Length: 491
Image (cartoon, rainbow, N blue to C red; front, side, top):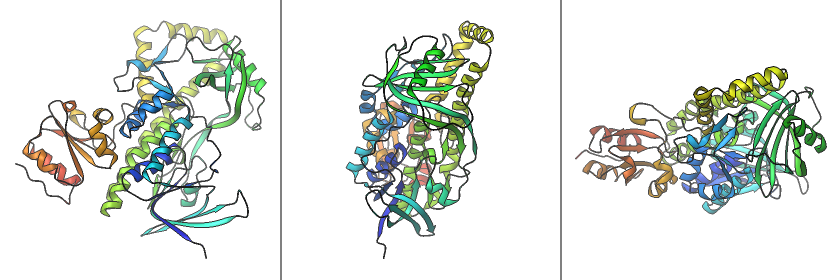
């Protein structure tokens, strides 16, 4: 008879999204099991290498931003075309830069947090079946890396599929994953560079294709390249010397790639799940949406998915009221769709630039370099889109309702409540009404000068649900809405 292991939530996949979900739920006091197909010794050397401002906001709420930033390289500007740069340094945000850092550094910090909070990890567990009923979900896994295949059953009240583009959770739920391939074959490698770009990182495109070179760690550079003559279907095998030659001809100078530590090909797809939820099972990260690597958005949007869903799952587990889960997909699907469009526009622009004749390309670059304020506004718009700082969640309105509150990433006392899955009432000064609100078990009250002259009701993911006077009768109604088990009366 197969033994069943029980938990509150089963998370399938131990990439960034799965690790953050496990840490969030465990920190909120829930029993979490993480099932990962890879054996423990296998590292996750994947293509993600950048973290943008909004994802850093969420990592800061969790107390992880500082150590991840220290391990990476903040980049104020990213070359676009010619002399035009995508200038992150001009953005109005707590983190006005793109952080270049390998994905495994982010994973290491997220995993340590999850383990410390009590999440249980099981490696070499491949999901082969998932079913559910009105009471919970059941997951069947197999393992067999060190002997005969062994089946095991797991049960929980909810399941989260964070198992990537080839998600078995999504497949088991019968959720479609429509989309298309953007590029048939992109070469990716980590290697050393004899003649690095003058600005540290560079993007170039010409008739041979396009290439991107960016420093990541320990003297290694992440290199992405696409050959304009690549056939639609190619072998996964790739010759490093051909990659080195391609970079030289694309940049029209010696780049000097050498000493690769890994190299691979991948097909760049744009796909989005037809739905992010099937009853008690949810999709996050690449299981829900994938897009081109241009702009480095994949891991970032996945972390935002988790920030939106984890507190909802916690509240449903604690109260038994699952209605709070209904808004996860409506809020996050447009963000995934926008990321596909933003990254797709960048990669298609590079492909088009590589395919036009050289005189036309030179004329285009000359226009771009002399576009003045228009060109700078265009480049700043790209920086804003990639950073995610314009992302809104929930009802939007005046006074920044629906926007992320910077105080969530800056104020330690606020973060303590958010990490516990609580709403926060941040008020510029205490009143009888705010003190009464503080007696609610699901609400933390913090007096903070960051509020200026208005009280803010902040969701556990840092977004503003309400803004108004600390004495407002509307505040009483809002608190009752988010903490219905507790009666709060106006003074």
